[in-house]
Amino acid sequence: MDLESFHRRSIDDPEQFWGEQAALIDWHAPHRKVLDCSKPPFTRWFVGGQTNLCHNAVDRHLATLAESAALHFVSTETGEQRSLSFAELHREVVRMAAIMRSQGVGRGDRVLVYMPMIPEAVFAMLACARLGAIHSVVFGGFASRSLASRIDDARPRLIVSADAGSRVGKLIAYKPLLDEAIRIASHAPEKVLMVDRGLAPIERVQGRDLDYAELREQHLDTDVPVTWLESNEVSYTLYTSGTTGTPKGVQRDVGGYAVALAASMKYIFCGNPGEAYFSSSDIGWVVGHSYIVYGPLIAGMATVLYEGTPLRPDAGILWELVERFKVTVMFSAPTAIRVLKKQDPAYLTRHDTSSLRALFLAGEPLDEPTAKWISEGLGRPVIDNYWQTETGWPILTVAHGVEKTPTRFGSPGKPMYGYDVRLLHEETGEEVGPNEKGVVAIVPPLPPGCMQTIWGDDERFVETYFTSVPGKMVYSTFDWGIRDNDGYYFILGRTDDVINVAGHRLGTREIEESISSHPAVAECAVVGVADQLKGQVAMAFAVLKDPAAAVPTEQARLALEGEIMRTVDRQLGAVARPSRVHFVTLLPKTRSGKVVRRAIQALCERRDAGDLTTLEDPSALEQVRKAVGA
Ligand code: ATP
Ligand code: MG
Image 1 (tube, rainbow, N blue to C red):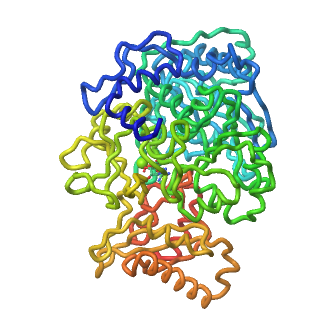
Image 2 (cartoon, rainbow, N blue to C red):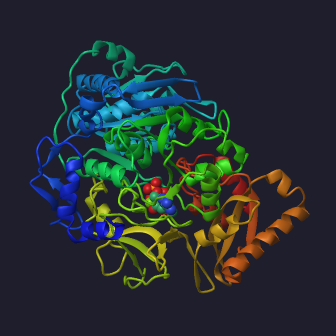
Image 3 (cartoon, rainbow, N blue to C red):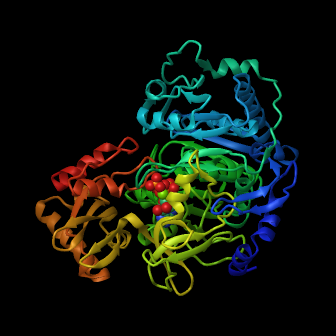
């Protein structure tokens, strides 16, 4: 079938369409109704159906895949490696569930997971799912204040953590951060379960802190049956990355999420049971939830859990892992590829990546030069996909399990089944035509897998997402897009990132793309800065592929700046020309690898840069501060 009719059918008759997809997972009891959208914009999928995510990710495979690999853990930080079959994963998850249950954790209770990328983190998530407890994973190593605000929002009965994580060879002791967070928080958990990796000392708080290894010994053979949940009960809450402001606590269901992931594994990622899936994200992000833990396992695939960076021990490590586990589907982010772009391209071909059917990239706009560089360098297909924490799975991409739609550089592709995507004029709310810019919006009902609401705040959910387009109750992605004559979409950046230069509206992304096309540039960020004459002007920050060689002198720096400006002039016209191109060695990014334009802009305008506790490396912002003399 062609993608267009497949998509059409999902929009015209969602009940029929998703009713069929429901058969991709196991149900303990069938649904009474596929879709209930009687209280818009709230959506309930598979009403009355009973299922369980852990059952579908683990137990279900015991009949056919018990001895097949389920989890490959590799840490290039500590040198550990460990593989578990589905049977072994099942045993460990049941043990973890038994430990949690012994501490009073049950259906509807929250469990906060503050863990590095180790198997026990996956056990903990799946154990929660098994018990019907709601997990809230917080990126390991977040500062105490960020962690405390999430503790207060989730009010967990139990926190699962570990002694330490490691990043680029640097140990990050979690326990002191956690203790401090609990001290600041207003809602302390009853218990803290600590996994001891033997990396950092653990100071135990008597009566509160528990030792995982000790309790595991006591529950080696305890049986914990799956708790069957109604499809619309809550599986987890997870925060958005906080790129544009205060993170929002996204809440997800059980049945809709399981069906959405199973369908995406079939139609989009095209993974088969017994194969290996490698996502280089982190369990602290939505990609980690959907495509490190639940998606691959639901599909009967082994998932690669990687603690490490793309550069250690060398820039070939990601491809070495592909070779080692014969990975067929890989998922990474443009930011990781831009890191590799500063390295010798020979690393791309040093390992046998022929098992790889496709490399999926998401999280930020994938600029054309980077897309070309990686797909040509690897000789494997690269598939951009666009989505959000809120949606849980791709909104725009290609679905090669439906039709071999060709990809187009710079475009994540076309609307996926289930998403009624529209581009709307931000002031009139009217649909715009081909090649016209509009806000990317989704007409409800949102498909299965998308957020149910903001945890504990239905009003904020409606207010935030469904009231920004005038006159219409549509979901706004807060991204800016354009569609070409063939129906391919292009994301132009966040609605916050549109700048207005002397009456011309420009997406910062367009300017960034143009700057990135200069051969000396590895990556860049453009922000709009208030200007008395023009309203706003573009200001650019560029990281060079080889900073030392490219601008050895002030004269060379000026020459390169001029060259880059002329590149933008040529491609977009003089209105888009940045007023300055500053050269830095790092861009300020969130821990999920997204450029924090709001903070850069604030510094350029001499304002306070806001909450910086979730930034990857604060020194990057210092460089910006110095460059603009703030
Ligand atoms: P917050 O909402 O808290 O500001 P965030 O939007 O960065 O944080 P995420 O949900 O992790 O949090 O990111 C989703 C956003 O990332 C999208 O709305 C879009 O701006 C960007 N994005 C993701 N994938 C792509 C892609 N393939 N192309 C372009 N942009 C993308
Ligand atoms: Mg967002």
